[in-house]
Structures are given as structure tokens and as C-alpha cells.
Image (cartoon, rainbow, N blue to C red):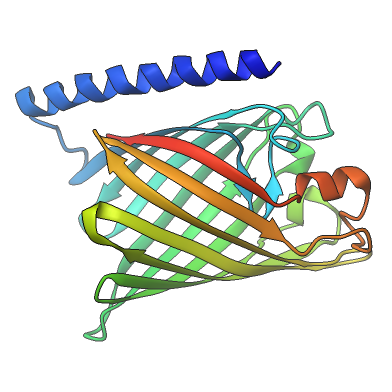
Length: 254
């Protein structure tokens, strides 16, 4: 099993390197077409795990993840796109998540504040009972080489499809760019859950990333305050997917 993971990781990483060379040459030779006064963007990531608000989306890193995002952004700040990733949960029907999204970014007056308002859906083919949607509200401010973002993200329907459960995530996301293009970033947040038998949790991450030959490498530590007393994730499997962990990933944007 471990050898299979290593072979798969090396195979995809090699593909990313060749893809990087190809897209670099293409960008030098071809003119990029615009679509409806907007630009098309893409991103591909391979990582040892997919951690979302402290939770491993691959059942404690049981499988590596391959993720892709394709998006369109307009000159006015409007954007739309879709995110796709493999996942693994106790429910065998949860194998893939598809995340269509639409939003707008911009700047608030002369204060240098930026905003991002986005509607994001989590769709699970073959397990539509788990589908739900969130409204992401983010405000950011740059201070020299440091950027601080503040996020409030309420659910717009039942959280993860659980009847009567509603959630809202509060988080702060700081980052700082050092010399030689090293970027340190992290977040700390609280995922509030409301409903019968629901309970929220605190989550955090801290990592460093660097762009090397067109590939962005990211090494990140994730943690949470989940323990055996937690109403939702207090079981052994629940604690396992919320274990503190280190995740390494590589991303290519185009």
C-alpha cells in the first residue's frame, strides 16, 4: 500500500513537471484568448492528504489526493469555476467532491481593504444526501509583506446534509512573504455547528510554501481540539481523522 502511494505520487509529480515545461513553452509562443472579457485559470494539485478545517477528507490520509480547479474571472471582479477532488470517508459512496462556485472580489474605498463574496457548493456524486452550500465572506488587508484575511462562512442549507444542522465558520488567515519567495501562512478558526447533538470545534494550520520551477511546494501542519468528549467526532474514527498531521503538496497553476 505504501509503495503504491509512492509510485502514484512520483508518477503524478513527473507529469506535473512535464506539464509545466509544456505550458511554459506554449505561453511563450501562443496568444491566450479571452472569454467574455475574462480570463481562464487552472490549477492542479497533488498532496499527501486533503485537510478541511482540521478534518482529513481522505480518512486519515489513507490515499493521496489529486485536485483540479478551473475558473473564469471577469475584469469587473466576478468569477466562477469548479473544484474537483477525490475523497474518502467511512461512507463508501463518498469518493469525489465537486465544488462549483461563483463570486466577486473587489476593493473597499481607499482603505486598501479587499473583499471576496462567494457561494460554494459541496456536491458528492452518488451521495447527494451529503450535499450542502456555504456563503464565503472574506475581508483582507495588506501591511507591507503581510496579508491578513478575516473569514465568516455560514451554511445556506443543512450542513453535510444532516437534517436541522447549520454551521458557520469563523477564521483568520495571516501570511507573510520572506526573502527568496518563501511564504509563511496559516489560519485559526472555529467551525460552529448548531442542531440536535451538534458541537463545533477549533482548527488551525501553519505552513510554508515556495515556487520552484513553476511548481508551488507547500508543507503544512494541521491541528484541532477534537477529543473523546466531542459529541460529533469523539469516536475512535472521528478522532483519527482529526489527528494532528503534516501535509505536503505540490501545485501547478496555468
